[in-house]
Image 1 (cartoon, one colour):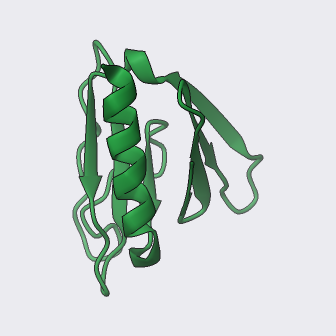
Image 2 (tube, helix red, strand yellow; image 1 turned 90 degrees about the horizontal axis):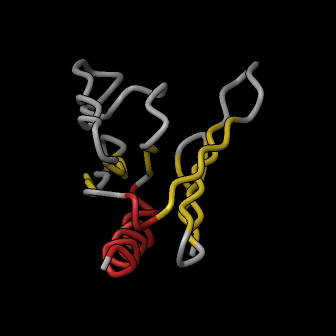
Length: 106
């Protein structure tokens, strides 16, 4: 199951969540999370005007705060390794991914 995001993607194979982030001028960064280690998920659907995001919460860490301002559009910062901004066209895929992760969590 894959979700294409803004400057990255999320892949879920039923056990592992892999978040790949790409920034201009930076090497690709890859973060792996076991679905059973996730304590919570957050999904903010994208609109016509603003990108949304998918975020995974892990034990012992608070979810990254949404950045304010017109350019951030209420999303976590790009540096947050457990979230990814998504476009409106990815809303359905992101909803399915979150449901699959929640089911895998038990």
